[in-house]
Image 1: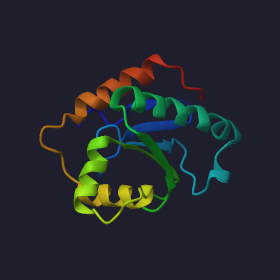
Image 2 (image 1 turned 60 degrees about the vertical axis):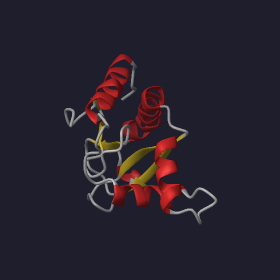
Image 3 (image 1 turned 180 degrees about the vertical axis):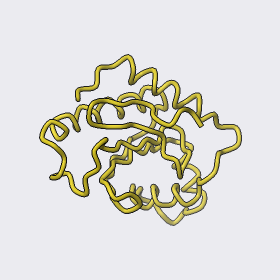
Length: 145
């Protein structure tokens, strides 16, 4: 796996999802833990949108997913954090083969399935290279905060 942190700014850390090595799947966490968005400092709240946009833009440029899901959770960690989850063609095809009855796409169901299915490195997929490209994109962009 590439270096843990892909990017840091004053308020947020961006890193690969450690429990699901799907290329481009990032976690955005506040550097000062908070159990609610309302607990973030006002300047962190103001920087959050720009941070999420920059990370999403980098995922889109490198991975070229159909969509990037953004979900806020605080279950596995005591602090809120955002999952930026790329829904790619291969991921949707893999899901559809296993769940042909699901005609309509359900983002939460797809994400839950992927997190349970892909818990180890995938053969033939270089996640280090993908995350390094995302790091380069984020480094060259200006992230507020």
